[in-house]
Length: 468
Image (cartoon, rainbow, N blue to C red):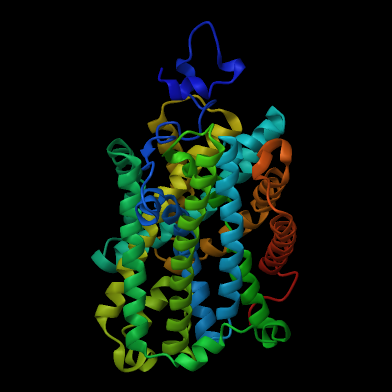
């Protein structure tokens, strides 16, 4: 065993059989095969150092521009023009706060959020939390699986069931990439993010939105509160902003960089650049979500068109009666390409998140490849069964996206409240404890997000008014 692993051993890991179990099994470093594996320069300039720390933020930002958010953002623009841009802005600021806290907790403690939560509960509690979080990751993955399957169907005319089945095998691509090094994964994810960004930027430029009205949309409107339909859609945007798996993921992959973790000065420097990376990438996610809403406003506002599904959006982009003079099959194809890129990106992060919570909550002892395959199958199988049952009804399959939000809503408090507590405790964070304004803002945000998600659940089951 190398010195890095020996230094991180806990007393109970020092067994007479040696330390090998610490490396190969779950009761050790978070994502041990990438933990402390990426070199960073010692005395380089700002930009070179930032480049070395850039990467984890891209994997996290993927969750904020996944296919599950697309329909909501475009529908928001088509229904209320630019008014909900202010909601996207507020949501992005919330995301930056919580993701920075997640990265800091992971880097300071040397444990991810799942491991820390498990340390402060019992075995039964850890198992229950794993089930809840696993359901949330499955729910998140549903959007990616359906999005990828539909993209394959639209681009290559592959039957939806077959497309969903194909997505089950992309986990093996992740296994191959892990062999090449974590930096390669970060680069591929960042490239796919760039594809998504430029596709929608190109489409928005062609759509020629009203720039003045667009910037005015970043100022909150009173109609958001008084208009029930707008309020519910705004709650959907904010309530779905922070997904549980992203908090677990960031607390783990933020530990990938290699530096002297016993040196407070070097740790402080690492925290600084990690948070900068996170904020830059989440700013890109913010731009993408704004572009989606602006696209919906510029092309579809005022048209009596149902845009509730991916296929509706695909065909609307080539319908001159809806999208106007810029409508073309090329725009539709670019939309499908971006959808596929988003789905594949989210597949990588979802699978890594599944491994993190499985290791952290229940200390599952099995080979890494088996953990990843099981995590992927847990997400794919329910969608595949549903797709086979409704193979001639793609609309039914896309309805899974709505129901998947219930699990995300239920799981959210079980991640944001522990995160806020851990980040605020001096006995855990030491000199890196959250500042007072961060602590109180985080508590306020956590409570508001929980209330909004409860409202969304009540809306889905018909207890409170839904859109329309």
